Structures are given as structure tokens and as C-alpha cells.
Image 1 (cartoon, rainbow, N blue to C red):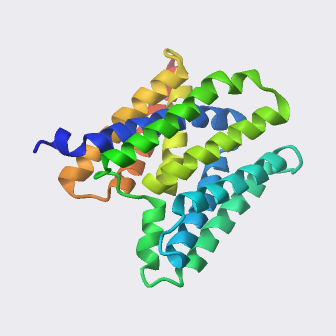
Image 2 (cartoon, rainbow, N blue to C red):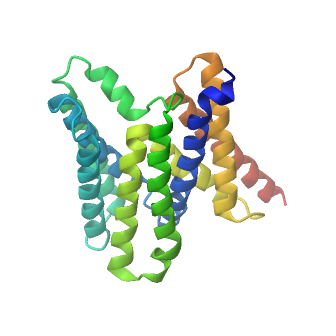
Length: 251
């Protein structure tokens, strides 16, 4: 069996992850609330931790979405009412990660579970997992491209964070919190740092190449897939931004 035949669901899922997270990543960077996605992802992971530690993995998706939605609602409320919003969101992230550590301390496999929550291995994604993710991301993408631009004020904010919570619910379970953060920020940062192409198109292509390269490299070199995805996407984005800025300064 060839590499493509074995790993094509992982390749497709990786590209889908880049596509859907770029939609939110571009907006998050423009708003200057970089830690929003990381905080929502970390709070969402509390639901996974509770499910694994106390429910033998039952209701994992429901628990993850409940906590992600709670975080989204809190951030929506805080955005218009709290000063120094980045500090507030940073504290939410710290609360999330410490909560997970305390919950998983009750499990004999706590360290392994925490590592999976941070960066999971998507190499051997099943076709069933892929199809369910594609349906969800398709719905979210449709809403963000059609309904979201027509709204204003609180309704627009609420829809944005609810769709982000729904996306994070799925992607945290399949890829992990840190992978979600990397995919939200790294490709979008590269896309916004160049002027020749539309940011969304460039970010999606750039991120897809990085993630597919990371998948292939992690498979052949027997490296942790999640952390390989983070390393390649983040390093590539940083190098690209530095080169772009240097070239711009010279001109």
C-alpha cells in the first residue's frame, strides 16, 4: 500500500484544518486578540479531560463543545466590557491549562493524555472521522462566508465566537490545542505579511504546503505528528515574515 493510499484521509483533513482555521485566523490577527483561539481551545480541552478522566470517554464531543461555547460566550461578553482584554484572555488560557492538569492528575495516564490534548497524531485518521469533520467545516465555512458578513454588532460577535467554538470542538479532538493555535495564526500571519495575493488564498496554500510537508516528514522520520505540524508551520511562517519584511525594507 502506497503512502497516499494509507494516509490520504490525514492529508485531506490537514488541508481542511488549514482552510477552516484561516477563516478565523485572519480575523483574529486583525482584531489583535491573538490568544482568543488558544484560550477557547484550552477551555474546550477541559471538556475532553473531564470525559476521559471521569466518564471513560463518554460524551466527549458534547463536553468539549459545552466548554468551548462557555469560553466563547465569556470572551464575547468580555470583549465589550473588560479593559486589557488580552490579559483577561491570557488568564482564561492559564485557568484552562491548570484545570486540565488538576483533572488529569486523577488519571494514571495523565501525562500521556495531556500530550494528546496538546498535539494529537492525525496520521491515521479514519475515513469516518474525516467525513464528519468535512461536513462540520463545510457548514461553518458556509455560515462564515454568507451569513457572517451581513450581521453587525453583538450578533456578529456572537456568531463569530460560536462558529469558532464549534470549529475548535472538532479540531481540538482531532489535532490538539497547540496545533489549532498554530494553524489559526501561522498561515494567516504569512498571508497578511505579503501584498501580491489575497491573504486568504495565500494563507490557505502556504499552510497546506507546510502541513502536508510536516505529515510526510513525521511519517518517514518517525516523529510526533502534532508537534511536527506545529514546528514546520510556525518556523515557515516566521522565516517567510522575516524575509518579506527584509525585502520590503530594502525596497
